[in-house]
Amino acid sequence: MIQTLEDMYWCTLLPALELASNTSIHASTNQTPSVLEKGCNPKLPQDSLRKDLVEIHPTAASFKGMLDRARKHAVRFMEDSFAYAKDKWDKSHATPDFKVGDLVLVSTTNFNNIKGCKNLKYSFSGPFVIKALHGENAVEVELSEELSNKHPTFPVSLIKPYKSSDAERFP
Image (cartoon, rainbow, N blue to C red):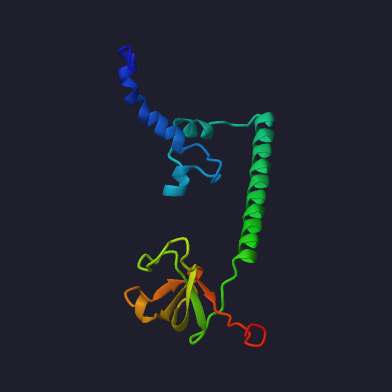
């Protein structure tokens, strides 16, 4: 709640806050937002003062070296964690190798036109024949007459290969 006259002028501080936010290094990207957006940081008054310095204090130089080493260390561990996450994702999410003419089952999670009790509805419908492949992530199937009003292209996340039952083991 605004209680004094000084509290009403908070909007005059917004440009300074914006500059402080855009020129500070963020933990998630390890870069400043202005570098990511424009490619460079804006020129600040203290930048022109640094050019006039004749020599840098040894403690400041060692502190900068320590900061540079810490930054390289953090970048290396971020790259390692990204590589680890990518390996885990790739192991559990293999792209299926479907071919035209294969029989597949289609998930019924987005099918609203199937009549009956929702709890007793089959989770997959089919088998359907693959008519065309659209890249690695989409499959076009030949749908039956009851599903003819659905679009025939589905993402591979909603499709699984059809495995017919063995007639000898399950007569």
